[in-house]
Image 1 (cartoon, each protein chain N blue to C red):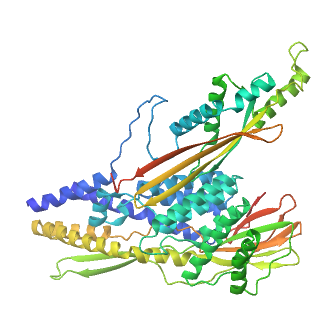
Image 2 (image 1 turned 180 degrees about the horizontal axis):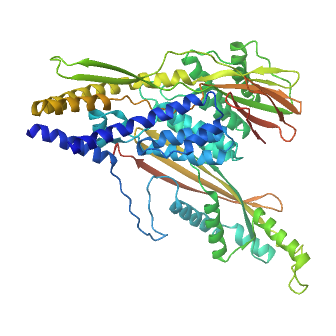
Length: 411
Length: 200
């Protein structure tokens, strides 16, 4: 009996942490990022949740204006995810017999690429554009590794867009153009419409490179886009809207054929999508540009889960069989023991609902060229923020729908 | 009964195995070549610095300069850009190059811009606070004749768990007097990295 109690306690211990993280992610929609960051920092992560913890921590640090701490946290998460690309026999065995939360969180394909986006922004807002460039090169390798029979697996338009912006800041024009094209290609493959800012970027870069063939091609593709006259300031504005949905558990309890025991099956799932995308606006007094959707994060996390389903179902079935046999053995020995073991297997059957659950729901982009010394960023429900441009020619601005904070890189 | 026990043993083994880890520490010779992740490391920085400096000092620009100026050239290491896929600490690499150049005894070396600023601040402080006998005057700095600049590039090819990483370090020595490039050197490193598909 003591060994049974010991095992029950261990089984139950792993179940609460993932729900705590999801609760904090829900609170992020109505509490300032700094408050959620403080709450997250007050806890130590389980050894199985290290990557998830540092991904969330790093992102919150970035949007709370602590880019150097964000680099440290996100690098920890990145290393953990790289380490966990190899399969652990003992963890897989635990996932197939107890539940999947015994497996260390290794990140979805989106996490593995998105971490480079957040790191690149953290380096950029720490005034280290070389570091940001390194991250984008690593993201490119990560995306190439993830294409495995599925052209869109782990392919993020936002990563290519950010890469293009960084190349443009470094005046690597052909690299920037290629990256803008990749962003466009991925968006078209996902059936998304190309925002004006990206259409303009393709025209701008083909024109800057003096590539007339490409310029004419994009002029035909996007005839309504007009290149702006040369202005003193370039403003690349990124907007992170909302908080991505987190996974929920879907469970079913059924009696066994003979009716002697109950079998519970739990799988992770996402709730039905409710699209309520908001945009920010950048305004210089003469022009007003709305941000356009580049990455629908809510959609790609669902794509990731769909691809993972065959392995989730396999493990769920294996687990159900193993638990059924365990209960049967216990019942043969003693009916009371069988009932207790059955209860334990029911309680221990939890779905793995861990994810990078504090990511934005969407990533949006707008672009403005202006001679004005100030631009105003209008944030949904967060008011207006004025940004001074007079110290430099090129500016990258990051705003979120979660707080009034606006982050600014200039060169 | 036997089957029942074996299930308990399996469950316990799974729990124990899924939680076990250990770490050990061993002191190593700083010159020892140790490759763990396959990323750029201290061994690469040392090898490249030595190879590049040996090449630079064996070329014609050095005797020509000594012959026409009657003194050893003064060199300063400028920016070495990291255009690679890794966060390479170029400061370590630059320190290795500086050490190799100074130890060669064939060139003079002057401090870089950041360190010069600190030294100038110290001289300004001496100007106010040090005794006349020990005070160092401004305007006595040794001007460099050449600046070494460069970049680290990589090409990464990945297939499954195998990677080929190709590093190319390019350095050039530029005359500060007339912007002439007097030496261009490059060193290449190629690594094959195979990651395991299984872990503990």
